[in-house]
Amino acid sequence: MRNVIVIWIVLLVMLVSACDAGSPEASDSPPAPPKERKAGDSQVITYPGPDKAPKSPYYTVAVRQGQETKDSFTYISKNQFPRVNLYSEDTSWTTFSFSGKVTVVVTSQVSGPIQSCSILPSRLGIQPRINGHQVEFDLDTPAKLSVEINGQIKHPLLVFADPPESEPVPEPGPDVLYFGPGVHEVGRVELKSGQTVYIAGGAYVKGYFDGGTNKTDITIRGRGVVSGEAYEHKAHHMIEIMGNNTRNIRIEGITIVNSPWTHIRMWGQNNTVRNVKMISWYYNTDGILLGNDSLIEDCFFKLNDDAVKLYHSRMVVRNCVLWQLMNGAPFQLTWNVSVPTSDVSVTNCDVIRVEHYKDWDNRAVFNSIHGGTGHLSRYIFDHITIENADFRFVKLIFLKTKFNEEQIGYGNISDVTFRHINILNEMKHKSILQGHDAEHGIRHITFEQVTMNNKPITIDEFDMDSASVRDVNVIPGPGG
Image (tube, rainbow, N blue to C red; front, side):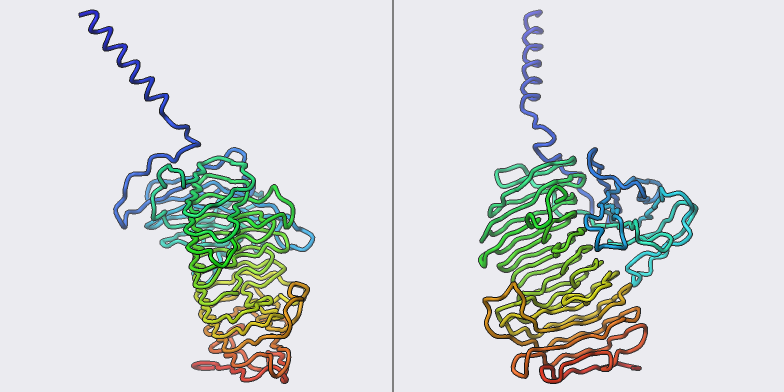
């Protein structure tokens, strides 16, 4: 009997040892997926703060649902280009996911009580409640918000209230690259076709992603952060996959900060960027360039060059929030586009701030610097609200630059419609429409139901070159 007991003990020890030896490290593999929830269940998901990630000294954020309150880690990005970005010294932000109804509680760590608070986009009508050093507000749908306390944006807070992820954490495999919670210093990450990169909430990845050319079927998703803070200005783009045969690239849910150059740069076709948040400071920190038949949806931009680059046909941009720093345009139609480009749609977007204060070629909410030979046609901008922007509404010009010296001749811009554009304040400078000549110019431009400071705009608010611009129509709409 004693021998039988000893044998059973030995077998048990061997079994436990085998299990321990086969257990993966937490940083190497994704955790077990959470329990399934039924559609419509209320939930709040917050993410751990990495020990060495930059933490905001100005705010703490908590999310309350019913009787449960969860802290949401608040990051900070320091202004890397204070010589020209005069209004913000930094930007704090927090990300959480939820469904149902929640109350967001922001506590100011700065001395003195909160006297006032505004939440942008103002179109959403979110009403804050102030109590001493705290402000709280309610949400029942995902939103990307700027919480601005005591009338200043020196230290703004951004709240990214995301929906829960719709897909499970990917299973381990040769085509899965997983970044779990914590700080990861990875440098250059080479992307390959068919790969999934998952950046978990609470992951802070210092590096960039380079796909070379002509890659297909790549997904980068999650709720984590990718930072370019370790790199000098224009060292590289943060996510880049070039080549005309690049297709089916999806980037979703992540936050990209401190970029040294463009945030997302792709050619090809059928690419999607959804629910990506971007915060960067240098000149040349353009937002997103995609290929034909591509979608930009539900993204946030706070950066210092052209945010949405509309250089390819059949692009769809919708439900985005934009905070433009002092350089670049929120919506750039062309910078030397050389091929016919058409059927571009931008709808339901909020431009919450534009910090232009010094004139240059690309400083307007809607801009073109068309030194290329391409014909741009059938662009529509519909249901866009613009606030805290007082420089210039539109600037469409033809101009050769040092970036397109190889292109001989000029193109055209035609059939562009601006509809249901609500500008909440006055502009200091008139809009500008200027082509090259009668054969290479701007024609068939429509402004329909566009208001500025609660008044319909008029043709008098445009400077137009009569030799190269024709058929500009301003339609006030009902009651105008």
